[in-house]
Amino acid sequence: MNDKAPSAPIRILLVEDNEHDQIAFLRALAKADTPFEVTVCERAERIPAALQAGSESFDIVVLDQNLPGISGLAAYKKLQQKSGEPPFVMLTGTGSENLAVDALRAGIYDYIIKDPNQGYLLLLPLKLKDVKQRHTDFRSRLKAEADLKQAHSELEKMVKLRTAELSQTVEALVEEIAERKQTEQALRDSEQALRRLSLKIIETQENERRQIAKELHDSIGSSLAAIKFAVEGRLLTMKKSPPKHNTISLEKIAGYIHDTINEVRRISTSLRPSMLDDLGLLATIKWYCRSRSEMHTDVRIETKLALTDGDVPDYSKIVIYRVLQEALNNALRHSKADTIRVSLAAVNDRVWLCINDNGCGFDPEDAMQRKDPLSGYGLKGMRDRAEVVGGSLSLDSGPGRGTSVCLELPCEKSKGVK
Image (cartoon, rainbow, N blue to C red; front, side, top):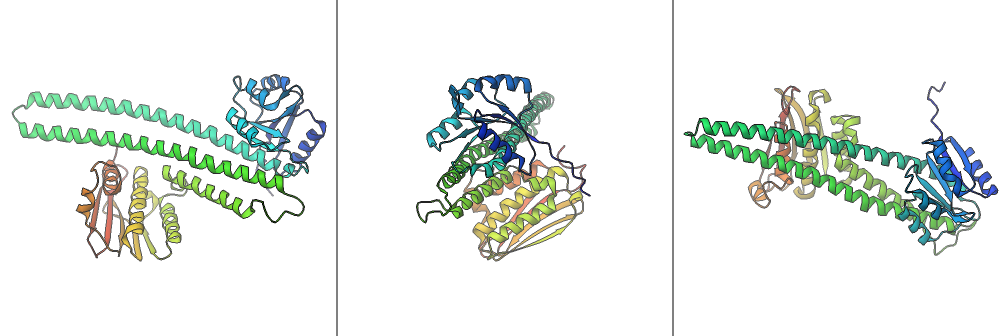
């Protein structure tokens, strides 16, 4: 017995005046595994009424380019100021790249070429399902960004309030114990260090977000465009017996897709690994070490995890993961080691993460002097992350004797960052 609830149908508004194409469209969707509900609108001038009557009942509007009296693109340009939702997909009988670029620039979500052999009908359900999923992901990302912006604003208010309270306390201490100059100086130094660290944390967060946004736009956007044009170019040139030259190989297209998937995963992981939330810290560490080992087959990575996820406070898990990333990648890139050992354990109400390698080692003091102490990267960056949650990081290395990086964090959830 299958207890799985049926999935909600994808609701389509089809703007198409050709009855033959209407029937072919409906038959193609009727054969798909995914359920569809299609409403047909034959003329462009009836689109506003259909959208208004349907409110938000349509998931996708499929708009034919060749409509009576007006092109689909021109009709869309008239509509877009009034309604940015749902996403529009253009149907066209020509594969003009200029038309594709104009459509995408105008805001059309995607387009489908109606080839003479109607091969596009086989891909139609998958194409529409993909558009629906991408649009859903886009809306979710916009909401997440808005929530993040609001949380950041609230955090700034709390920091300003706390800084103001701290300034008042400092002023009172200066007035009451003016004679204790040495204590006053130490307090001022501590206050300045705290402020610099707080500012650096905010700056680092913004830099990370900015970099991720740029990579999503440049890398993923260009990769997906390359895949789309390649696939459509292939479909246009396909015959019963494909020519032996002047074609795009399916293997090359598969390579584009594979590279894009890896790029999406890399960017998502750099923001926050979803596995950390879904499966927990231990599973994430095992996965990460295994993935690094597969990339560096000449290095053996051993893991020893002697605790449970419940032993580690939630606020410490991302710190442990980031320190593991930095230390393990440094060892793989620079140490020339053939064995790296990763251990995680709970000892005397403290969590210990250690990354040891048998590589060439280095001079830690010399490495620290080559970088700005507050650069936020490398060794100092790992120490800053540890200190934010009430922990510490130690480094032991030297030329010819390998490297050991140890992270120590509070184990009890009642301790650490409040």
